Length: 210
Ligand SMILES: CC(C)(COP(=O)(O)OP(=O)(O)OC[C@H]1O[C@@H](n2cnc3c(N)ncnc32)[C@H](O)[C@@H]1OP(=O)(O)O)[C@@H](O)C(=O)NCCC(=O)NCCS
Image (tube, rainbow, N blue to C red; front, side, top):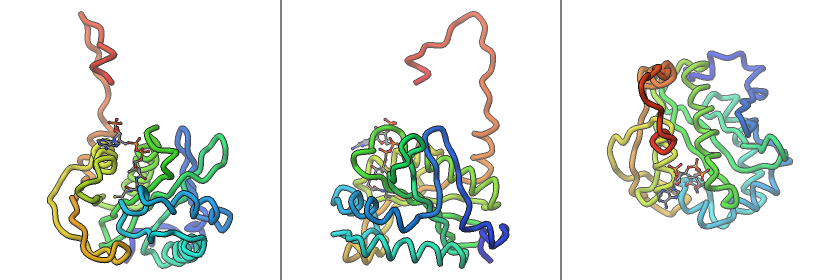
């Protein structure tokens, strides 16, 4: 059984998640040109285990088809990341369900959109959705050992380093050395419940709070 079976099948294509700056929604055919333009970049594709490189519009079209089927089959829940203000396609974030109670997160953004906290914003929203709506027990993530930005995104989402290993990545032509990360429901619930205390006799330093 997939975690997606908890939701009525008819709402699966329509799930949208709104954050401060982003809309996460089903990938559409209208995303194909933008998706291909942003993913056809070695700095993006070669850091992932799945994106082909070079990345053509036909790859984006296959992705949109595949994701619609995978979502309905309960295997994956991928979202296009859309800028709320401009409506532009920025990248993708998604969950895969290797086991009933576990989800693996993945994400990429076009290079021009890096460094603004957008991947963290999207990943946090999807992790919240996974724990709060889909009832999963663990969110896991993996990145190439050289991928400091992705490692940092996972850390900022509360995932902790678990171990290292090799991942079969046909799109990269073989096995990739990767680091694995994980966040349990209990730890996530603890972060979400964490509220600031009232501290008297001192004022918080903005530098320390950053
Ligand atoms: C990974 C990726 C999604 C991050 O997107 P992003 O929107 O720039 O991420 P955020 O801004 O939310 O956070 C990035 C963090 O990594 C840090 N970072 C970026 N490059 C870094 C580097 N070379 N070394 C160390 N830290 C780095 C940033 O400083 C930031 O951390 P901070 O907030 O503590 O300063 C983006 O770089 C990307 O699409 N890369 C290619 C595809 C990819 O790697 N996907 C993940 C596959 S596992």
